[in-house]
Amino acid sequence: NRLSQSGSGDGTGNGNGPLNDFVALRGQLRQGDRVTLMTVRTTLDRPLYLRTKVLDRYQENSGWSPSNVSARTQVDNGAELPDPAAGGLDTGSERIYSTDIQLTSKYNDNYLPVYYAPKRLDNVNGDWRYDSGKSVVVSDRRHGDFSYTVTGEEPTPTADELQNSPALTPDQRDQLADRLTIVPPNLDKLVIDTTNSITKDITSPYLQAKAINDYFTDGRHGFSYSEVTID
Image (cartoon, rainbow, N blue to C red; front, side, top):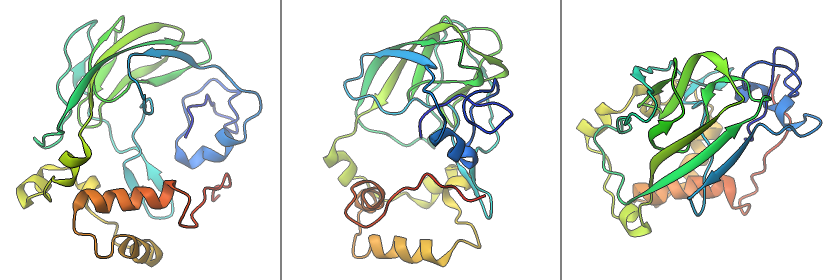
């Protein structure tokens, strides 16, 4: 999902409001002219997605949306940020990165784009706060048209580290937020049957997760994305 600027109108990128959530994806995918929201320079060899909001809550009939943000850590210019709240779990190998981001005047949002997982932000102050549970930076006001630098640690576990990772213990699972572990009670049977079919005879938690990811991304299972969203 590309970052695109949207407002209180139809989500075409011509307004002046915050970034749309997943439910307004149609307007973002079918917007007209391209809009430059930011320029990014990073030391990452293979950068992943810049993160703003995390759509981590699934609700029947409304789909995915962000849960409440618990941003208590003030982002003072250059201050060290706490580690992500991952229930005390080790992510394996890590690599330090530095990223320079220039937001244009077209960007106007109360979430600040960062790569996972930021450790410090330079040239960022004011009312920005950090949520270590989601690794997102949020403000009470919308901002844009400024530059900042993000220094962070990118998890780089090897395939062997992931393959050898054991399943979560009950205590480790209890430390994770309920929204990450509880299956909605009225989840469509098609989702359950498809997941069971994809992971059949796979015992490794890592290979189970990889099989589900491959189902959506490698193009060999008949799954395709559509630009049409449900009204």
